[in-house]
Image 1: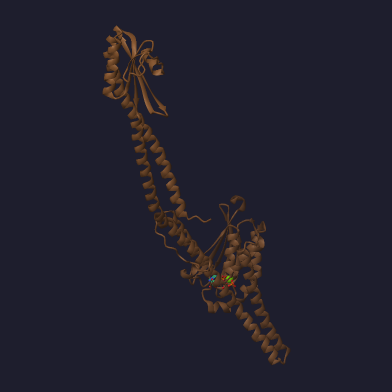
Image 2: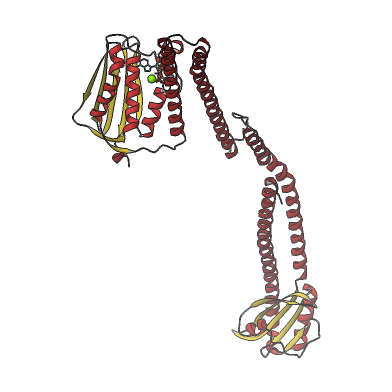
Length: 468
Ligand SMILES: Nc1ncnc2c1ncn2[C@@H]1O[C@H](COP(=O)(O)OP(=O)(O)OP(=O)(O)O)[C@@H](O)[C@H]1O
Ligand SMILES: [Mg+2]
């Protein structure tokens, strides 16, 4: 069964309200009862004391007729039954006249014959609530008897019942008010905003990424809505990036495939006459296939890193050797532009890293340095260790990168000059791969550049032993 949140809260409030009212009511009623009875006791004690004072001389003389008259007279005046007893507990005067000569030994009488005034409430089914009280009668410091009053206090109970009924009515009225107020209030405060959030979540799961929900309640629900909005916006951005990535990837794949198709079709239609001509076609096809396979490999590596399916194969890597290897492999490319590559490594540094991955990262940077430099320039591969951090830098004296592009060059497929760089064979994935590889190692990669003067790319790798 589904119970609405608003109803749950309303019912809880009601329960709390009724429990509080019940405890409060009980305390109030017992307090009133005590004070009513106390007041009644005080009045009756003073009557009893007056009677005791009046009765003392006659009790001393054993004037039973007058004692009885006293009991009857006071009894009529105050409207309660009055008994006057001697020290043996024998009733000498009785306002009702019914029990004269009989013996009475209720606890209050026994106490009063020992000199103590006391009172006691009793309940009898046929009479209801009765208050018994007795005071000693003394003459010359001696107890010579007792005055006993039995008072009907059912009126107090009646008044208490009235008060209780009023409290009950008040509780009921406030309960109804609480329901009437709390249900719509809970609806406004809780049900409506949660409904909004639920609808927003449904819209998101239906693919409406970036959907924003408006809740201005200045409470936790507004906080939740803000977090939801942030999440929604992030998912939208991620989705945009993913779509853009797919669009870019397909676009990049299209051109070598289209070129291959043209080349192969030309081969088929033209039937080249000479072997030389056929070789030329095959050479072009081979170039396009290279480009295609490089692109596919880059995409596969990126997606592997993204899916966290790559685990680093950490081993001590001789960094000087690695940089020299990069240099050697790039020598033909550099020679084409008469570019000199220099390697400068501080001592014999070995550093824990995934060799193949680190090679790839440095290679990509050095490849860029050569690609984006003009003839007769220098490329520098440096490495040193600074405060337990390995720093590899790649300098060039090339065309540089202007600040507005600098922050985007690590994005996938980003190229400063798309038209030109496509002719250099680049797809704009090189730096994205560098960034992923270095991030995977827990390091950073950054770039500084002065347009027309050159660039510096900086890799930092923390020592994994220090990190853990
Ligand atoms: N050393 C550099 N000097 C000037 N511009 C650079 C340099 N390195 C990178 N860039 C700019 O940043 C862009 C992105 O570089 P990246 O290595 O990601 O792609 P690419 O070299 O064009 O292609 P790929 O590396 O996939 O072959 C380059 O296209 C270029 O515009
Ligand atoms: Mg590159």
